[in-house]
Length: 172
Image 1 (tube, rainbow, N blue to C red):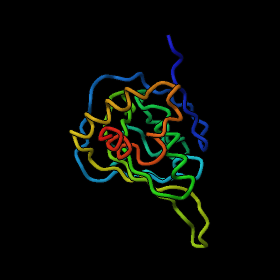
Image 2: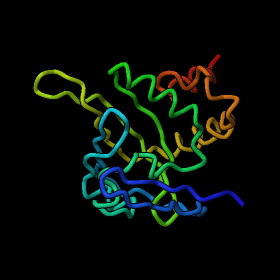
Image 3: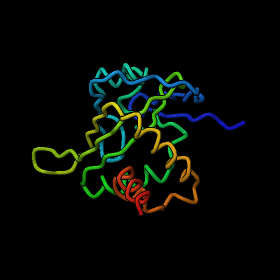
Image 4: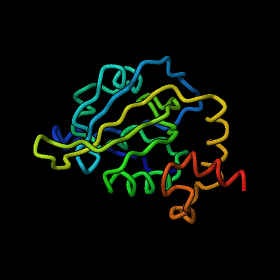
């Protein structure tokens, strides 16, 4: 049996055990879930909608790595590509399957952009999430299943906007 993922909050030092995935979707009912992170991906802000949807408290989220809600169905290549894009201070958009504290999952369309301080210094990222289009979830689920293994971590489909790259690959 695999060892459970343990997330350590960088502020409270609390160890948070991630639940095992549960094959039950919790539909995102709308609104916008917003988080902010530092440049390392540590959560510095999580709005009420995000906290409600994930089931994590503000105390658990602030100071934790954003991977606290990463679903194991997400390919590593998708996040590697996302980090390449946002590290260049560019915007990224993609479909993400996340896992709640109770192990259930939800899909969102995520938009990430760099955050700058008043002096123009890059200090982190702001991510907003909206309802994911059902037909797109079906397509991107196939993409993520196809390219899930570690051998696909550098696949070009993940180097920019993963979903748009997938659509372009399907047309060729």
